[in-house]
Image 1 (tube, rainbow over the protein chains, first blue to last red):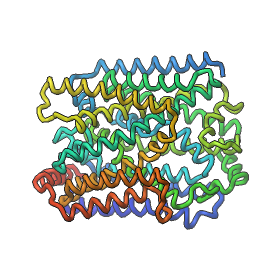
Image 2 (image 1 turned 180 degrees about the horizontal axis):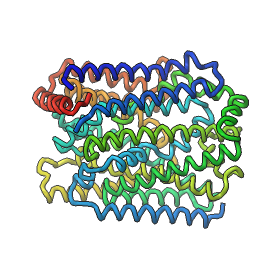
Image 3 (image 1 turned 135 degrees about the horizontal axis):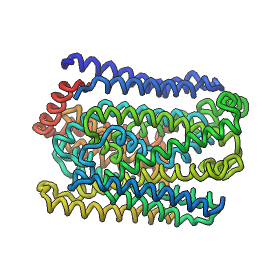
Length: 65
Length: 494
């Protein structure tokens, strides 16, 4: 990958992860505070964590020795 | 619970730990790099397990379960925001590893001192780590003391638990340094995970009718516990104040960031990250669901921290499972304690009393000797703090994640901003630490926000403002960042 491509990918993943992290603060408090079931904050945070885990693993998959 | 069962379980755990530590010693080579970093040659699997065991302490099955018991699902959000902070390692991890190998850094603060060309930065950060992490260590020791005492009905005194945990941690750190720590960590992380899944599955399937019924009971009996702010504890500001410092844990806590130096290669680092993320995700869910189970089975406890010990001692958990759970929680505590002790000893040697310019053989031997003495002194201090059972210790321990966060701006600056300066770094560490301690002890929450939010704000502001008006170590900054940029480009590190 050249410098430009790396920078593009860096910005892309930074934005994705930042949005996910902001959503972990915003969504449960703004939209799910009245959902009294598993499919409320519990489910949202679980999916959020899986998406961040996927993103992090994806970033590491670019690495070459 | 009969005390001899407890003693037998503890004895088996101790023997397994010592066998592992001595096996590690057989593989151990000479030298300071070997002692503190296992010669930067740790495989991915062991690195992942050790990273997990070091990060996750007795807090998970006791403190986090207690948070869930009293505050509901917000505890899950808090801990998963922390886990998401591991995404920082995808950016910082390979950079730490590359520059650590090139410049032979042992401690993350030694790296900061060199990058900013000012040794006082390393000393200030190391001192602040000691101030915050020794009480944190003491709280882990106290956890083992309380757990053993509660499960034996007081027959094993609190003090004996504290001494036992200290002795094991000292031994496993001294036997072969990082190698015995990572190997015993690996054993202990497997124990932690297996045991926690086992007891949770037992409780859920035997007493709560399986997962579907478990969530159905939770939404009918305690619906507010499935929302935030829920029962009240997790107001947005409290949630933010707790989660923000923990998000940066992977680069702010030296016992964790030092582990970014140890993988054998990038492949091992990849495995370490993947392994930790999987471990953390499962262990978090298990601890939180365990806390909810306690809420359903033994509601009405006044002290939420007693939820786990009380549930383990209740009729819902058979003796054999309660024993294994106790070993699992003790393992979680000790694997964190010995890692902190080893890392702090490396900070003492490299950053507080450093004479590292000529790291020839006799100098290395001297450093090793100081490190071993430091481990014992740190353990004794932790033990003394623990037996005092002072509120001050608990407060400092809570302040640890906030206090350690003051190095975060300097870490970002070191890797990504050539204009960052030594004055900016040092002043942000000093003023940030003062802010953390002052807000923690005064209880003052300006605009309702907790110490964590303000500490981060103040340290970032001071770091940037002072850096703008002072001169950066240009030559070193170019050398450091240009080298990393070249390597990152060659290795597709984004």
